Image (cartoon, rainbow, N blue to C red; front, side, top):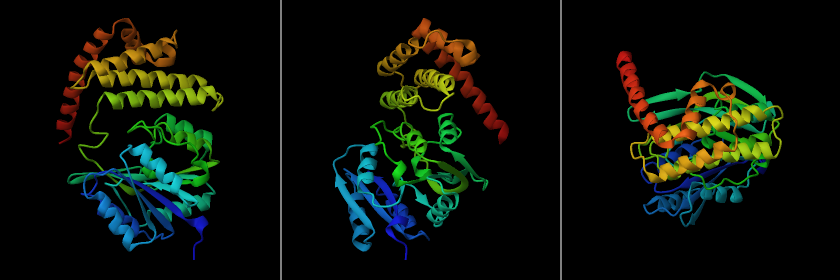
Length: 337
């Protein structure tokens, strides 16, 4: 009989997910690892999601439901964290599902490696096909600083749903930066760990929806990305974390700022609100001057020079150059057929 210390608290923000919610919940109930509690945070759903949550909770005492006014994904996740009773914490999105042995494998891995966080692979689920990511079976163990650096460099994804944490490293709350609240939070949790494990086994099935946050973009998401990468830079630099990382922290931040302005400029619905974000980013970049070609790389260096010189010319060039990128991508896809 497993005690409370073995408990996995699974937090699911639920918002208008009636179409896929049952499959998600069934995949958790069917886990081979049964020491779990499921915390369903109904974030003001206007469909039948709340009723489905209540239905499942009435049948299983390990499922708890909290209905609240809509406050966004970060608010729902933070609410779930305040309710969590387990030694471990996991996050699942309500339109996804899990393989039945996910939590057995991840809890065993944490215990065997005496680690505080484990990050697994996943399967991107498209309509009629799938793509397996980080699924070669490889397992690596890192100290906290190394894992955080890998995450900041994009070598480890910031996807909460691919991770299992020991509850005592999950200290900071998530900011309201949808869909980038995990981008601004996970690295902080990893820095509290002693060991972090990456396990390339694809247990999590990540449903790709055209309406999902990664398939649609607007000025608010662009601003949230800017605030998330700014938080990363400021948090690390102001606390003097990751000694010896100062130059890389600066480089990654500046390159992230330039990439954001490029992505915004290339949006089909580019508008004045996106222009305002680009202007804010320009002001931020100016406080880092002088910026050298050596630290940025030639492409990013040229882009930041043009951006600071004339924003309208920069936007026109980015939009014009995107036509060639699209043409090359289309040609490459054709060659692969």
